[in-house]
Each structure stands twice: as C-alpha cells, then as structure tokens.
Length: 187
Image (cartoon, rainbow, N blue to C red; front, side, top):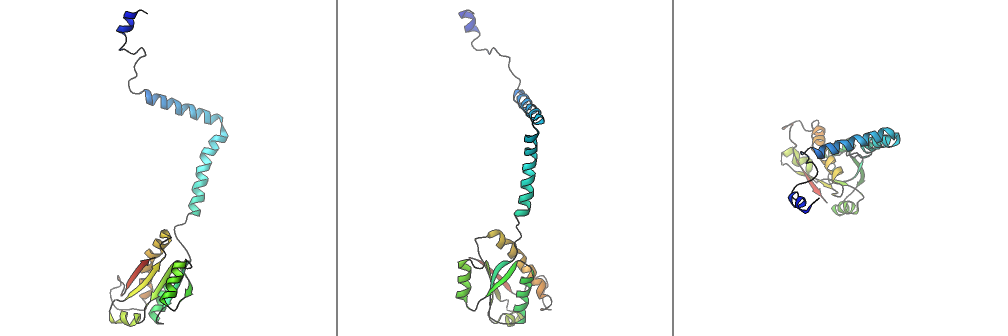
C-alpha cells in the first residue's frame, strides 16, 4: 500500500459499519450459546433453577412479619371490669403475652429499658369512671422501638381488638370510635 492510499483512506474504517443492531445480535448470540452450554451441563441447570426455589421456600416460612407472644408488662392502677376486659382482649390476640404485672411506673420503665418486655400497657387510676363520664381518658401503650416490624404489626391491631372487646362492656356511643385515647410511646 502506498503512502498516498494510506492518506486517502485515513478517515475511513476498513471494516464494514454495523447499523446499530450489532450489540443486540452479539448479545442474542451469547444468550443462545449459554443455553446450549446449559443443555449440556444438567447439574448447572438444576442449580440455577433449584437454588432460587429453595431460597424462596425457606425465606417464605422463616421470615414471618406477624409476631406472636410478645412479652408484655401490665401496670393496672385500678382493678375494674373495663381494664380487665381490655387486657383479656389483648391477650386473646396472641400478639401479646403478659409476663409481668408491675406496681409502679419506675418498675414499668425499668422492664422496658432492660429489654425484658417489648410492650407495656398502663391503665391509669379512675380510667373506667372517666370513660363512663365521657371524659376521653388515655391508656398508655409503651413499645420497645428496637423491633419496628413487631411493634408496628401489634400496634396496628391494637385499637381494632380493643374496640371489638368493648362492644360488650360499653353499650352507648359511636361503635366506630373508642371512648378513650390509646397513647403509644416508642422507647
């Protein structure tokens, strides 16, 4: 090749240009080649199919976002029918398992901070009388914030469960709303 031809052809490519589909053609050829290889190697094909299926089954059963029997402390400052109905309703949900009955707020806080319980339910003194008078009192539910999935699931069911349980005890009022406030504190 002469120097003149080299200068004339310097700006041109010597290979034929691809029209934009070259990438997809090469990718398709590679995928076809890999499937041909997989057809020859049955062990690799079985692993490619079975490992994700096994992971799906294992994690589907192992990762359960519905908590059960969460250890709960109770601070019942008055022994009333309404307070016992609320506690019985919470215990019947299988979300809460009452492990401790405490007699002071300090003991209540110590159990939550030490991690011995995940929830605490406090029904204050004069609660039933305030509900019957229509004063809209507050019931405290303290939740351990270190496990947000368990706390969220249990707390989402709380008001519905309490409302259902109180339909028998409280016959007056709007059935769609609670006659008291449930105050949730994450600690």
